[in-house]
Image 1 (cartoon, rainbow, N blue to C red):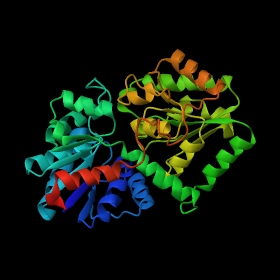
Image 2 (cartoon, rainbow, N blue to C red; image 1 turned 180 degrees about the vertical axis):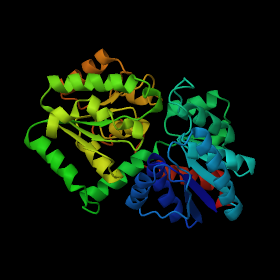
Image 3 (cartoon, rainbow, N blue to C red; image 1 turned 45 degrees about the horizontal axis):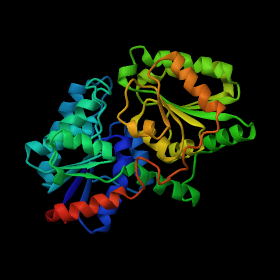
Length: 379
């Protein structure tokens, strides 16, 4: 039996297609969800028709990373005692992933790490994700890298070549899955979002999809970026913004700092949106302004320019492809890049092009085939 552990919406999005692919083999697969940001996680699970076998409760208001880590380790240890998995699968760099890996390592349960090898080169950025992903390198038996650059990072850190594989990013698998269901009307988009997109199209206006939430920007950097965006919007009245606010309470003020109230219908704020709605927004947006790692990949995969409001990114492949612009919190850079994007007709490559540096949408199948060959005792 394989246990798949996930907690945040990005983890669910990127592990869901692998769950579905593993179930096709007939293997016993159980899902444990720690529910970091519960409502977003529930929505993401429903898109893929997944129901968790174990639902943990680890979040509380104002909780520290130490408090969260201790809860995760204790509760995951109890799950492992109950099911005795032959292996666990984790994704990325969250508290759930690193704690699941550590708890499994202590019990000598093999750990399979999906999206391994991403590195920013700065242990403090993103924080604490960069440290989490490096710790998972130590805990994991098998490492599935999304790109060749990530694979080379692992090999440079002395991961055994026979245990590291470049398979592509499973986020592309998820995007294909969801867009196909949207196109077939098997998933319905929020009426409010459809109306916003239609109003932009009818008014011949471009719209930016905005997300901001990272810890390293909360000490003033994001506020500076909001000021730059406010200036840009004041100078470009043909541009609208859709801002799905992150559950972190610290993000409540960002819309106000962008001047949202004075812009009326040009600036739409939403508490949160479901994953299918987010995919639809990305597919329709002129560009993305974000500090999210996942949105960098999703934007590039759908052929959208991304303004990355961070000092460093572990998605260098998107920069090399010409779609990610790294601005940091520098007002002049943000203004310059946004103006360039909105003045130009940018079409570096179409959605899901073979040029997509993050993969072709078949990563999950590759992972399953490799596990069947290298880890047959699980099947």
